Image (cartoon, rainbow, N blue to C red):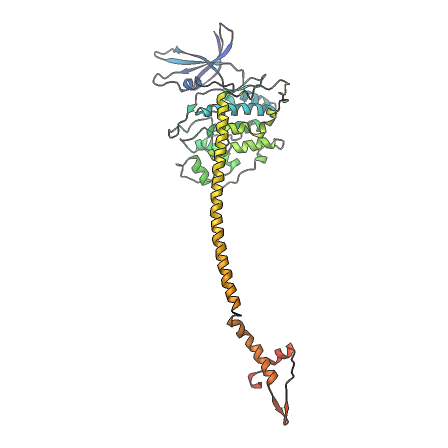
Amino acid sequence: MDTKVIGNGSFGVVFQAKLCETGELVAIKKVLQDKRFKNRELQIMRRLEHCNIVKLKYFFYSSGDKKEEVFLNLVLEFIPETVYKVARHHSKQKQTIPISYIKLYMYQLFRSLAYIHSLGVCHRDIKPQNLLLDPETGVLKLCDFGSAKHLVRGEPNVSYICSRYYRAPELIFGATDYTTNIDVWSAGCVLAELLLGQPIFPGDSGVDQLVEIIKVLGTPTREQIREMNPNYTEFKFPQIKSHPWQKVFRQRTPEDAINLVSRLLEYTPSARITPLQACAHKFFDELRDPNTRLPNNRELPPLFNFTEHEALEKVKEVTKVNDDLRKKIDELQSEMKKFKAVFLKQENRIRVLETKLGELTSTGAPQTQQQEMVPVTSCYKIHTVRKRPVQGHMVHAPSTLSANTVNNNCDMAPDEV
């Protein structure tokens, strides 16, 4: 078996090899095995069988140079490129990846996430380097399950996980009870990076990473922080407004793409759309057109060859959406009943007030209004009945008076009356 090193890291080494019997190219991931524990990556990969996930062909153990040193060797299908290499190539050329390829890559990523999440598995290290790519066929496969874990509700997990640029905010806040939604955030970061040509949140540290996120999403509210990590009590961030998504991306970026990013990169984990919902997003409508072809004029790879398991998950997703919708409708109907009860109560009060006002009106004008009329009435009577002797004659006042006459005479002093 001929081999050559094609990658290495803290996890171990990755070789490219050719099987002697068949001549098939494979990738072998060699990691140090701790005898005290079962290898989680091997356990998970043996469960996975999906067209958008790198296939585990074989595995075997080998001895190391040191005594009692044992290595686990995972024999995987070999795929030559990664989304990271393709993105870097376009970046060096000062170009962006064609939008049709971005749709193709992201759809397949979401499909792979929908599959592993349905099994309760969280990848926890979604990034362009872990997205294998066949440049000719356009097939994408998710790889490197070294950080993956089957999440169990109530069971704590380490928060220092996932590569920094793609780390969900709840991880930065130190959450240990996170969900598979951290993968959704990471996928949103990948999509934004492919659209921008560079990472959207390029933080130099954990704190700086949060600063980069706040620059775009604005300062999280207390409620959002509570949703990310209920145990986080500090809140000392400056109040910064969110930056409009349309200004984050180039002008020619499709609105559907921007909308999808905005629905993936939400502070509140439960507010992020699911991978299946992402697959159904209108951004991917072009892929559902039977006449669509790759830019190299090749046909699209199989995108809708859903397995029975995937189909069942789709039914569950739709059922859940319907249940959530029914619950929301019930809540709205309950609120309407409360509102109607309050409205009827207020309406009854108004009717009582109208009745009382009607009774007051039927009894005549209030006494205060009668008192206000007294000066004018008295003044008029004085001028119409008063008699004054002038040179022995009786002179009667005019039988009619103008308004001015009444007003002027009303100004007379008491001794003139």
